Length: 390
Image (tube, rainbow, N blue to C red; front, side, top):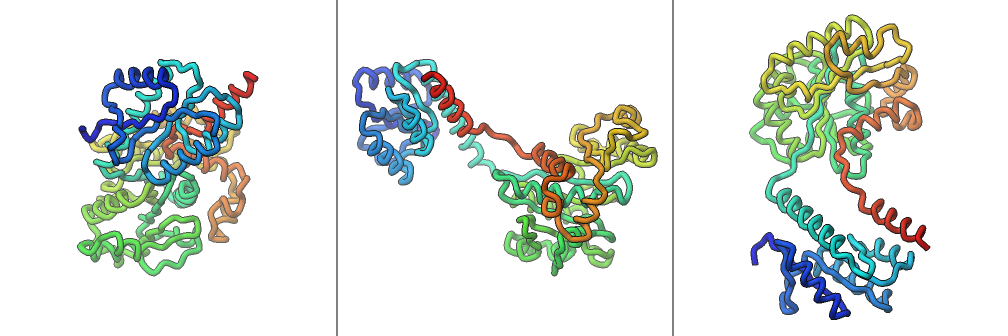
């Protein structure tokens, strides 16, 4: 049997139902029944619930826990809410009520097949994280604040396992101050010893914040980075991209060979600006410079207006017309909360978890987190519909 063939185990009591399922599965390409003597784990178990649901659910749980089956579809005549709740807790992915609707089963099998294909592809190709670079159209407009709070907010997401934060402000890197860290090392230590770079070496260099973010500070002086080169930084960031779900980079304001290398590698570039003529003028200059870089697609560059006030003299529409680009995001003006967070060396969610600016940055982080189908919501919708029918 080919490796990509889906093995299906069936435990069905009613002969007519069993024959009907056989016909449905045989008509679905890429699926095969698992013979009783086959000791390998089944990809899918289709199980008919009877009267002794307590023991049957226990049996299903034991199969799942022992990896004898990977996933379970249930069939039942019983639409009792307690049975449905137990099915959810047991981990069943589909629940079919009798009389069986052939179309529903076929759709579920096709969906299962596509899911397995995606899983197999992800095993063959290593996953890499997203690189998000935050740069400022000028100094002092909140670039570091945005980078730091975006990183720690991403780290709080349930489906995000790891986040790294890199400070590329050569002389004025302040990320350790924003997070009250006293790092022993900076990225200059790595570029000087780039041949030693492996996961153990890197994790010993990084400083871990209480939020879970791994921080890589800047050297803080030109002497600490004299051996750095675009190729070295590209190698370092590419290596970190393979280890972390997200790599957030505080790019400062300067554009040199190293920063251009980083920008080309970035999945998203947040170009920070304010609704002021000097900032918008600089933003325009940045955009024109970026347009000359062939390997930097325009759609990766996203304009973020910081310290936004709805009654600003310059409207968002005016700003978009002046830079000839849509504004991606606005961050509300909350100078007091922001300064308090900086002075205390804490992220915004610790200082003011319910403040509009904190919620705003949480929503910004959400735009970078890939949303997957929530199976539990689907089950609860199904349950609610059944409950409403009684």
